Image (cartoon, rainbow, N blue to C red):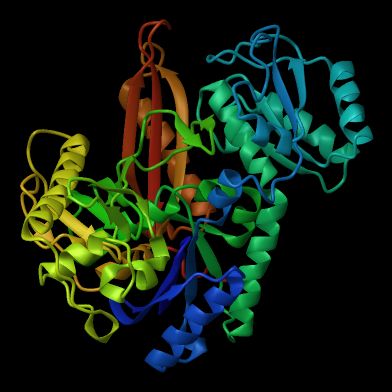
Length: 519
């Protein structure tokens, strides 16, 4: 059995799965002390199902804590940014174009060194060991123990980053170091930003992981736990301590994977409707379609792998104008149960439209809502218009796809949407995110720049696929279940003919032998 938990900003959702069947599910409010909320969710699903703690094989968690830390500029450590790439790129130093507040949170310590390689492995310049030692001594003198290292084209040749990291570890025992080739893609500035954000979260990550482990132990669970990352796969506790930034946007990813599990649809449009927003994403082959554009996290441009999500300001708590012609983006959020008309409050919300139209019964918690018929019709039409336009923006082609509604606000959609070929709102859709976390697999991704003039395409794909399979198995995947989930090829302009960026992703089920004690 598995337990899946998704810790959102408003609600903490949990499910207990026996095989693929839901034995128990709960949606509770997220507490200020997140570990208490996790404990409460565990308590509910275990007590409700009567399942013994020893019968639980693993707990999978999804969390927005690291995203929120960046957005809110809290729990961030000072970081020394080392870039290896001179003489190129000295006009664009690290943290360029960052919002001032987050740059200040990281301390603004930047160093630019000679070295790095071109895309084909040829050196830009030789490393200057005196320069490296001088940099290390300066970092050490400032008492900084968290460092992000980025080198040009390091995903192609990581040696310069690894060499500097090794010298740093010798000089500063226990240093927290992120090398950019481990977390970002080819583009230097965005990869460097990704490494800096990840490094700034390393100490907080250690606290969060320990807190989750403590919540499990307090509830008597001795099974391992994993945290879902933003490509729909899992990280073990030790991996999360090193790469917390890979959880960015894991919430929408969990919802999409949960929608796939609940409907059996591998290709569909998923709308996750919460209290404040509706997140629209695309399922392709059972996994979220990833964005190929630069991703903004807290005002910082990064090239993390991220699901391609369109967020609309439409949720159950979204505030409706008096004439019903506009809805959101302002929302009462989790205060809906106090401020909404259907709960005796004075704020006209999207939920009130459904109650007034007799399309939603809130039971004993709610009360009747009477609206002017024109306002009611206008408001319902506005909801449909917003969702139909959102679907059309995300459709991969002109052919309509099935639409799956998930999330606590899925009840907002009472009628068929014209942009959908068919509609699905499966049982347990309100906790699809927790289900998505519970069923997540182990993944491995490799990105390389290759020249099809020098190596045949089929051979290059096979080599990179083999690396991706090896990476997934090393991360804890069962070798017998590992498969290639996605291959992406992008021809690179302004380089030699046949130069192509190839990214391969492999996924597999969690290996049963991969059991560890909670951290």
